[in-house]
Amino acid sequence: MTVGQPQVLEALGQVRDPELDEPITALGFVASCAVSAQGEVDVRLRLPTPQCAPNFAFLMAADAQAAIAALPGTAGVRVTLVDHYTGQEINRALAGGGRFCDAFPGETAGPDLEALRELFQRKALLARQGRLARFLLADGLSAAEAVALSVSELQDGDPEAARCLALRRALGLPADPAAPALISGDGARLDAADLPTWLRRARLVGLSLESNGAICRGLLAVRHGVPDPTQEVQAA
Image (cartoon, rainbow, N blue to C red):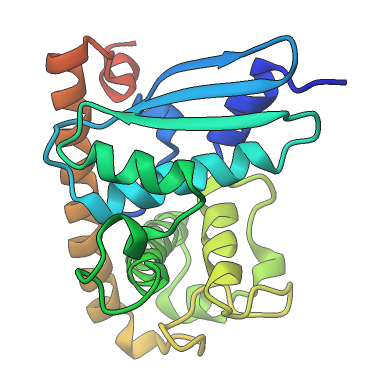
């Protein structure tokens, strides 16, 4: 059985903007997705501006290509970055199975962008854990009670908690049921006395991510007429 468009779009929904930690489908970055009867997939990605950072652009395009290629029944994949000032270099590298260093030889310290990916995963984890901690405190828990919680005590089905755990696994940090619900960057349990300072830092990082996300959605709305889903929610 060949792959279908719903499966491709679901796979693309697992690909995230590395800086914003939001799915590229929710952000409106998928301009088109076509699947032939033979299972050949053609995806076109658009970013908020032609000047989006090439490293971020490459990561998303490469991740999209890998996510689709892993689907059963896929006969071939072509991911094209459109309307970007380095689109030609990125598309050529992707078509040849190359890495970022192949698209931009001599401009990177290493062969890939995994260090950059980890940096933003850590920022996303801090911001999301901060939101999770504020939810726990708003529910009436004290600082000592919040930091004493384990992963198994978090609410089942909470998307914020689920994403925190996914990021922890990606970073090699403890995420088993007995692990602390809230951790520092090295995976240790947070101390209640340090929680206010940690929360302020998490809020600052979170505000930066949210602001950048709002800018991206606003630019897509102006340039391509892509509706901003956050505005639709607020208007409902």
